[in-house]
Length: 142
Image (tube, rainbow, N blue to C red; front, top):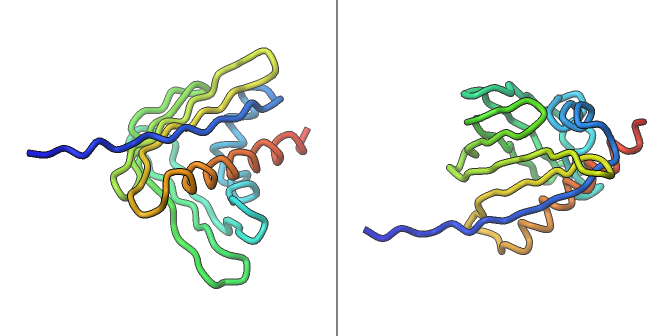
């Protein structure tokens, strides 16, 4: 039997806000819809999140011109409040999101299995752009 090792991609950002605020803004649908896009020509018109082991989440991501869109979702495996959560995406890939207090705020780190369709660099850039958009969103809501 041959096993294909999935490559992992890591993105991270440090956000100047409290751990509780970062956690809430990152996980609550009322905030997710405002920051969950990689570029200004995309948006997330709806998001649902049942943040508990066995709970699921989904975000509808669409081009603002209506030309394309997709649902991104998965099922939570582990959830430790204000610390980390893990999930399995609908296509079977694994991801972990961790939140760590640091001297200048909170470091958010996302580690996820790369998918096989798009180049790893493209995936990393897209996820990093979304995380950077989150940082801009939360820091503009003092």
